[in-house]
Amino acid sequence: MESWTTLMYNYMDSNNVYISFIFFIFLIIFGSFFTMQLVLAEIIDSFTREKENREKERAEAEEAAYHEKIKAEKELAAQLAEENR
Image 1 (cartoon, rainbow, N blue to C red):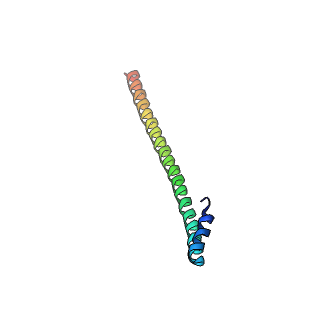
Image 2: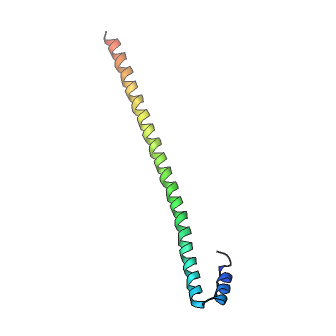
Image 3: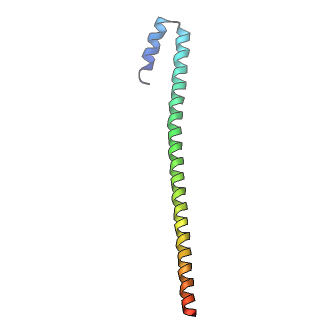
C-alpha cells in the first residue's frame, strides 16, 4: 500500500484521468477489504480450533473422571461384598 498514489498519478498522466482515478480508488478499497477479511478469517479460525481443542480436552477429562468413579464404585462394592461374607 506504500506509494500507490505515485503510481496513480503516473497512470493518470498517461491515460484518462477519471478512469485511472476510479480504478485506483476501487483497487485500494477492495484490496484493503480483501486483506482485512483474510486476517479476520484466520483469527476466527484460530479461535474456533482452540475452542474445539478445549472442548475435546474437557470431554476427555470428564470421561476419565467417569471411568475413575465407576472403578471406585466397583472396588467399594467388592470390599463390601467381602466384609459381608
